[in-house]
Image (spheres, protein in one colour):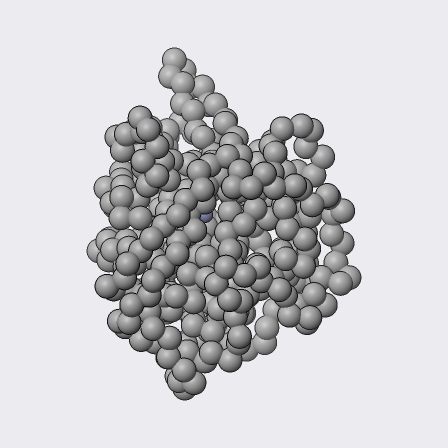
Length: 368
Ligand SMILES: [Zn+2]
């Protein structure tokens, strides 16, 4: 009997990056974004989008500093960090498929990951932190142009169940706007940092036209990045090997959690991707879940994209969501340069401050 424990973990990697001038990218910087370190405030028109939505009246949870909200006690609101409740969130992929995701970028090591993915024509879902999107616009543009699925990981990487409705709207919509101003598209998928989500957060996301994504296979690469005492990189390799070995016996596929924020995590990702590819059809979340990557219905994805065209995918999941889907969007990044933002893609001093994991959900799978 083998005991396979997967630890779904809360995790923070908030990067504080000193951007050095390198590549520049033209963008239409028509928006004044939240200042670094500031709690984003929503535009009034964004609040109008949830005004008539049916939002679960769950309490705003008290944060325990870096540890986030308590995960003990009864779960009355489908709180994944508490109970593993998925609700309407996407949490796995069908048998034979594997959803490949990387969180917390873009960063100065993201291009190293993209380089490798390109060599195997592998597309991934990239859950990006809004403030990092602003610092690495050229990297975001490259990821989109190379066919990766761009998705939202909030603006400040906060515990979403501790935020007010207004703050949740701001975290999602500012990140969406930053991505759209670079790529021309509005992501549909978002992942709550630490998997910290309940029905209140889900409902707000739905009202704004978003679908939440969790995971069911944690690589624990964050432990490597943080030099957690006793943690060995071989354990990450072991996880991938076990998951590949389950491909034939498991009733489902998988949806994994990795990070493109530190070189060590990218190196682990590169080392182990071929193991997954040999066992599963490795795809984006949108592909495995059958949901469109972006809100726009007439977008022509980059030629390198293997994702299904948005135009033939289902409409928004609710009437309120449909109401906020923008009209026609440019199929490529705007060509008229209103301003240029320096990208910290190269020559950048990266300083990462990390708040160690807290909320933790341990699921144990036992195989004969
Ligand atoms: Zn994260």
